[in-house]
Image 1: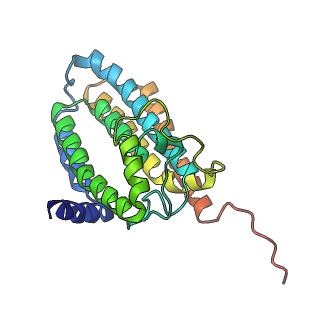
Image 2: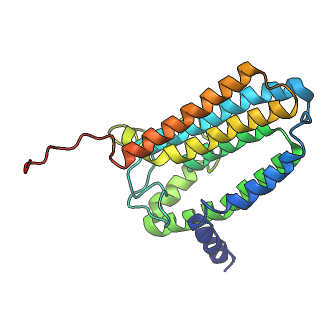
Image 3: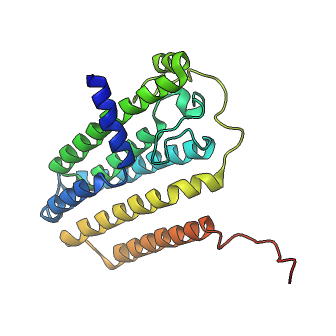
Length: 251
């Protein structure tokens, strides 16, 4: 009964996962509003080092998501509002860890937290992240076990949930080719959101501490402009505005 209740909660959170972070982000923003002018744990030197490390960690998480979504087939990666699994993904990144997309999300989240470098922000964000995914992952596992039975039970036995194994549990590639269009279609929104957020956090920190030089301001403006341009181009391509259309035979 407890497992059924957990699965129901997880299914509801899965449907709402694009909206549940909003109040948490608002709370974290309120916290950072009063602390951006003060160095985090370790002082300003550690802050500067964590800014660079945070961007690298976030990029690694994004790269894992992008690679996974370029290889996985539609109907198997949990990208839609309902749980679905037309087939069981066991190769590629799924041969190392059961939840490569969520591991990518963790990388992006950790990266942004390192840039923020605030003890309460760490605590609140990580509690929310692992609390939500505790329920979502268990709902997905119950669903996959129902859909794929012994095959998923064996996969779950061989592949860890969060910490990747070094050698693949299953040989072979995930998908016959890398689908760039699919990866861009799925990832341009989250990439634009977190990368713009990281740049704004950096600019906010430098301004609050009186370190925002003209050169730094220009670099941040160029970075934000690039993100906006990428987002607009990806959105235009997704909607077909940048694709070549066959000539109308009636003309």
